[in-house]
Length: 233
Image: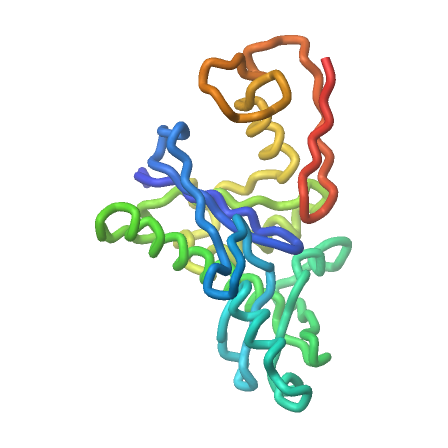
């Protein structure tokens, strides 16, 4: 199925976010800022999610963190709060019934935690696109979704994320061409190639890009929560 927009979701261990553009027009990539209602202005929001005592989704990101932090200790024990949960898929026996523990010590299905997180990011992205296109309504099938995954994950963990994305409604079936899993270091490397060769500072459109200068060497190091780029000629 053809799509009109591309939304790339960076689902991180500590922070998550997304950017979007009209397909084949990468020169106009747009992103969003998070947490401004809480006094922040960040390109990403904390990867945390809150469910109530009935295991129903409440909120994600800064909203989830602020609501949880304002609870009394007694109230917090009734709620399911998850943060830094992405790496619960690393070096584990991955099944659809995998359970992970919330801050209160009680477990929920990992599939529910991941799929509801992705559902929130999907809905937020579609809402942002609508605001950016004068109210034009887009649905998930109008979008090619790119979802980042760690390179160290095994195939079962990556398949789990594909299933979670399907359950979240990004695509209707796991084999859909509208869902692309991108390895985090490879995505960072592709972006670096679009930056100016001198200093990686993206200012001034007349500078020579890294991809146009054969022989330049660089290293992309994933430090967890941040991408550190070290380069040399």
